[in-house]
Length: 132
Image: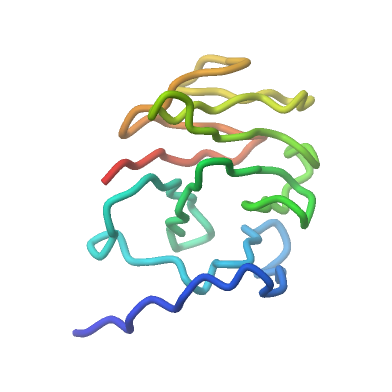
């Protein structure tokens, strides 16, 4: 079985609704199978029967707004919910004044360093931080 090569990320590609209550992201089509990940930092987000693996940049905005880098179509997610930033070479997740908070490994945090395998919860959406 061979997998298609990943498509290049298109910053101006439109954000589309996958299905009601599902993950939205303008680069969802470019998400890569786990065994083909290039070195980097990722969030693995369950989406129905699939797990979508999305790359994190130096600054990644997560929320319900279509202007976010990772858009989660979920009423429990604030429009501007969280930020993942690189600080001193270390990835840090910060709550962006959300209503329902950000949880790392079950603990509510305002800000926390991320480590490979950490479970991150944003609203009702649970995802896993990966570092390859």
